[in-house]
Structures are given as C-alpha cells and as structure tokens.
Length: 561
Image 1 (cartoon, rainbow, N blue to C red):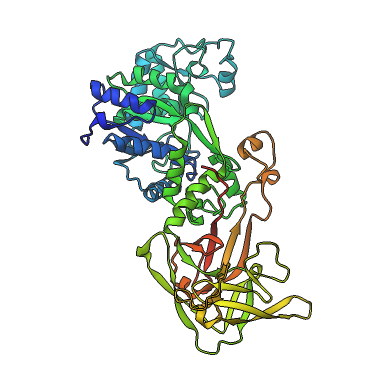
Image 2 (image 1 turned 45 degrees about the vertical axis):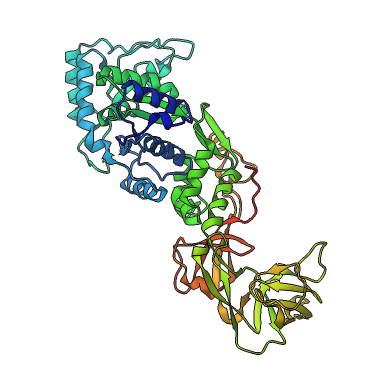
C-alpha cells in the first residue's frame, strides 16, 4: 500500500471516515475495493458512479481495485459483455490491479465452503419447488414455515449435495439452502438458496458445472477470498447486508472480513436504465445496437461524443448519498459534457442548411485565412480556411423581415463573416416558386478580420464555407430516445406501459451539410464544435465517400449548477 498521510485526508463521506479509523487502529492495513460486474449486458451511465467510487476511494488511500467478473449465472452471461467492460474501464481511465473471473478462480473454493457449512449444520439440501419455497417464506408480518427437509442430518445433506454436483438431479429439483431463521424479520434471512441445479453452457467453463452458486452466497465469499476490505454497492443491497455478513461469519470464519457499505443508486430523468430493458431494445431492433448513440450505454454515449471526464465529473457531483435513490435531470449530465467539450473540441465551420451567396465584387482566387482551433487552448493552433467568390451561409442567418435585435444579414444590411470580411446584401434572387435561390452581396476589402481599417461597426458575425473549400457531410441529429414527459421510463414499463408509448418518434434524423475541407482530416471519435451550431463527433460508420458526424450536444446550457 502506498504511504498516505491520513491526517491530511479530508473525508468526504461516512465511508472515508470509517476507512481512516480502520487504518489508524490497525483493523485494516490497506484499502482494497472491487468492481464486480455480472457480464450480462453493456454498462450504462449509472454504472460509472459505482466504478468511480470503487477506483477513486482506493486511489485516495493508496489502495487497490480489482475487476471481478461475477459470472455465476450462465443463463445471462456472455463473453462479449465481459470484454466490453475491459474497454469501458480503459476508456474511463481506470486500470484494475487484478482481473478475476469468479467462475474460474472461486467456484471450487466456494463449493468446499458450502460442504463445510453443511457439516457445520448451517446448510441443507431442499427438494421444495421454487413455488413451494416462495409459498413458505411468509410475509413481512408473518413468519415463514420451515422446509420438511430442514433437519436432515449433515452427513445425508453432504451426500445429496455431492449428488447435485454429479448431475443426479434434474434442473429445479434440488437446491442447497442456508439454515438461518424462517421467522427472521428480514426476508432475505429466511433460509435463502445457496446453490441450484442448472444445466446451461457457461461462456468460460462450458458444461463443467451443473450447479451454480446464487449471487447472495457467492458474492461475499468472493470478496473474502480476494482480500477485499470494503465491498461497495448501491443502496438496494442494504437489506442484503445481514445475509452478506452471515455468510462471511459462517462460511469464511476468518478475522478482518470485508465490509459491505452502500451508496445511493443513481437514476437520470428520461433515461432508460436497466440491463433487462436495454437488452430488449437491442433484441427488438428499436436501436441499432448496444452502441447506438441514443442509448445510455457507455459505448453509446462514447460514440455520440461524450467524454469520460464529463461522466466522472458528473457522478462525482452527485456524491455518495445515503438514501435509496438519487434522481437528477439529464441537463445535469449535459452541463459536464458541454463544459469538457468546450475545453477540448476543435472548432470548425459547417453550414447545416446552406444558402448560396455570390460576392459580386470579388474576382480573384480564394483567399486563405486562419481559424483558431480552440480559443481555450492555444496549443491546438490554427487551421486554414478560405473566402471566395461563392460562399454558403445558413438560411437562418438571412431574413427579409428581421425580428427585433436581429444582428445577422438582411437586404441592404451588413454582417461579418467569421475570420474574413464584412459583406453587404444588395440583391435577392428567387426561384419560380418564390423561394430564395441565392443572394448577391459585396464585400468590404478593408474590413478583413485582424486588419480591419474600414471604420465600419458591425454587430453580427456569422459562419460560412467557401464553394472551393467545402465538401458534403452527413449529420445525425438526435432527440432523446424517451419522451420528455416520461421521467422514469423503467418504472413506466414495469407498470404496464408499452414501449411504443414511451418512445420519442423520429429520434434520429439524418441531414446533409457543407463542411470546410479541414474536416477531411477528422478521425473516428474526434470531437468538434461546429461554430455557432453545437458539438459533434465523427462516427465509426464514416467512409472516404461519406463522413458522418453525430450531434453530441447543443451549445446552449439549460442547467443551473
């Protein structure tokens, strides 16, 4: 463990106060946390809170964090998901001190512990069906009923348990249950199942096992076997803590056991969180895949252009929390996305809805000028853009009937072209249907940006691209996948809402735009601020013939920090 001066650490929550006390007293000699995902789906935004707490807490105290694939359920787990977690952690900037697959590292040890608990009279083989077990558990106000198999001798239970492992029972015909208290006020303590018979191919072990440990049994023992000191999880596991501690006490039986501590679960308004629902969206092809840019998965938001720093800053702002659930508006996340992109995104000029402009008094070759790549970072330098005879501006940047305080181009009015000259609109030419075909403007030669000697005061500045310095790109504009009025989509679905009832129609729209040639240098995941329009990220679907940019976020911020 790295040498840390505990007296200089200012604790930010109850856990950190406890860690300092444990380290000073010698109760723990180091801080070891674990990141224990079940590889049953891709990580989503809310997972970042858990992993940030795990890694940042250990780092603060000079400790370690292990990545453990909690792969005890072959019905849900796939190697694809496990591989994605390694990539997600690397993207977030976290490197685990050890990578562990519970199925390979601990199944034999956990099985031996279960056998010893049988011999100690702490577990028994039960032949009640799942329905019968549920019917005998009791209620919050009534005790449960003991299984008729509860008092079988340890020797007979051991024989039956070994027969379970040897495959002599059909799936669902036998379980191993902990022998605790059927009248316990905590329902989790009423003789929970420790093992079940399940013939399913495991993504790493194949058909080696036909019995699998239940999460509540395996998890605490995996923590103990790893030497974890603080097992950190979200608040819904608080009611499971007595069971966690019981398995440690009766199965592990060693001093200095891991401590389970809980933080508030994070939910975000209008965001569908939950692997089960996300998997359904993928399977039903409502989205293009787990990395659909409208999806709240890490691969999805990464593809859309969100940054790892923004996500970590966001979850740190939410804090530890000591209630079951903390719900925050999506704009809170967008605040941190926008703040980070403002610092790192390269500026470029892109016209999304082009209006042709002919500069009638310009007859030379296109003139180069420089655009600063990022005003917040001088090290990013500049890139070359061009002004010429024919340019394109945004249609919304010209008005025949301008509203009050309209500081863009009007007939007879002037506006500055970013990095270039002031232009004046002298004429509007129309199509047969009455729509505008193009504008005729003149430029003021003495008004070049950085060397303006014209003496003309111009209130407005707009972006543009030159006809000889632009190419067509595809832009994917997104709306929220879930309707804005559906604050908690997971709850709505659980209460019977249909998926089509909560989906925002036309949440993906593709448009064509004109971008300055500078963007031909872009690479996948490169992030840009399209000046005056918003933040965009180059998509992996791009080809040499079709550059695709995902709309990440607008320039405007509606969140009051």
